Image (cartoon, rainbow over all chains, first blue to last red; front, side, top):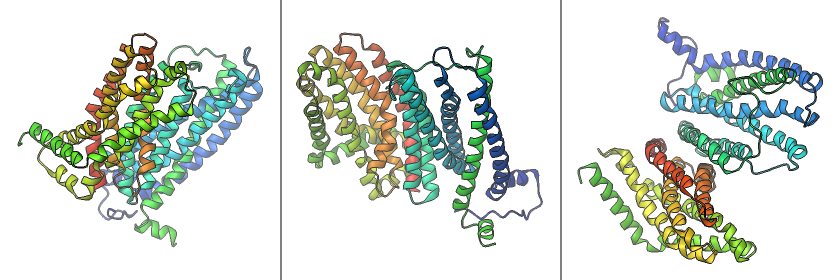
Length: 258
Length: 225
């Protein structure tokens, strides 16, 4: 445990201390609460608009009929599962290399949220697979690497909770997260060359998307909704993580005991 | 002994000698390998043509589990008697010393599997012409598994009980090795060129050799903290 942070700086506020205060857990705790509210509200609003657009406005697919509409949940969830891993690894690196408490808190907060998105992508994919492929589960490249991603999230959480001393646990889990990050592309390509059935992504970073514009707009809105929800959930979890890791400091005690 | 190379070989000699003093334990993973392969056969259709189909998978999965079983003991004893702390304090590069420990571990636990594998390949009706590929894939794959496993082992040192946790951490990282390893053997069984899979296994081994020592050292320092 390091020295307690107080929210009131005693030295004159230079540029450096101001920046330090910005990254201080006490400040971040307040800051996260405000932003989580805005992100959560935005996510709800965009989700309602996107769901209406995807379920009511967008036309049915000429091949898959209405079943394709699960795309509006499936694709954003799958994308966010990978984004969550990237954010988790970035937080873990920050905690491990620069001993940022916020980095550890961020990584710990990302793991369950990312695992939830991964489960969402797998379950929605299974429900979509039944009418389209005739089976809930096939051992296809995308499905398998998504499943491995879930194992990596589980591994991170298991290790972060298995070691009693919290700083040690965070550092050990951070090394695991980074090892998983290196391994992730290898897993992805190994299973891709091994077996594949899943359709390629319809919306790429470059070039024209091969999906009708009426279908694309709700999808993009859903992407934004999921992303905002991710940030809201992570910020809320981060606040809990900060309360736990800073439980011996003055500001947490003041907060808890009034 | 004052050069890093000298320290490397001294440490390998020490670890192999320690393992030799407990010869019985060297045989455990090997016996596990034997039992696990037989279990595959007993659990499925013993038809020779069907066995040939699952031969690559069962040999590789058994080798993977046999490796996994030995991981926990890689640093545990040295951690308990503080030898590990002394090792990291030594003036030699810690990554070299860690590599020596992993190499000694592989000599004791991975290499015996290579000797046993052809025997079980015959029992599983694996054609003889696929045997070189089986051995080469294990030769490239088991050291990579030892390296990644050492990372898992170092990470779980500070945890109170590490058995299932270690498996949970390490198995996802083993998946590419398993896919390319058994893929190489399957390709060889059906008479195809296994060069691509071998190249991948080699690449994974080199990547593991380059990256994991730093990770293992970091993990050991975290656990010793």
